[in-house]
Amino acid sequence: MTTTPMLGHVALITGGVRRIGRACALALAEEGADIVLHARNSREEAEAVAREVEALGRRALVHLCDITDEAGVEAMFAEIDRAFGRIDILVNNAALRAEAHFTEMSYAEWKQITGVILDGAFLASRAALRRMAPRGYGRIVSMGGVSAHLGAKERAHVGTAKEGLIGFTRALAVEFAAQGITVNCVIPGKIGGKRAATAGKGIAGMPLVGREGVPEDVAEVVRLLCRPASSFITGQSIHVNGGLFLP
Image (cartoon, rainbow, N blue to C red; front, side, top):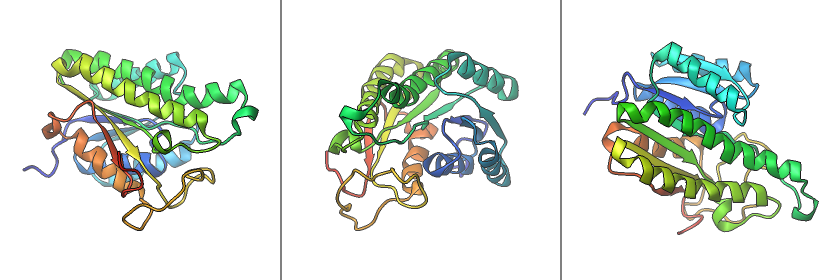
């Protein structure tokens, strides 16, 4: 088996410069893919990850935009077209983390959080599928969250949006299977390390394996799902949580 099964492929990771996004970018680069790193405004961090990708011998492109802005997302894909002429892999990882008591949550907060997670996945996936379907190949992975299954106080907006990604994944898997495109959802549990202060705060308990996860635990599953050989896995929601939640 080749050690670079994604050689010649191009992967876009939204929210691709920190933690799970960065780990996914590096994992796919190790597989041979050239990497497009999306971020909203973290150019310095994005360029640092791009240098890590390039150190692995792969090409890297940084693009900053609001993932909920239709024109901005279309411009990002136009730049991908110019730079690479193709898109093979999309990882929908863009998200915002926030907490608010439900009765004190503003409608603006609700729209912002659900918008980045769901609208962002819609806009990026639509643009990617318009390019993948005619070529008869593609891999899409969206990043869910265990809070949608366990429940987490003060995170109704996040849990609702992450649960929505599961239905989104199934719908696209059914619609595009005949075009050689797989669509899956990866659902991380508690992921430790350097992170936003609110991340995982509302999730109680310790995984059965006795430790919190690390971003690379999640990236390994994304790596598997994005390989050409993983053509028989689609429409699935795969938990990566060390036994914190047993579906």
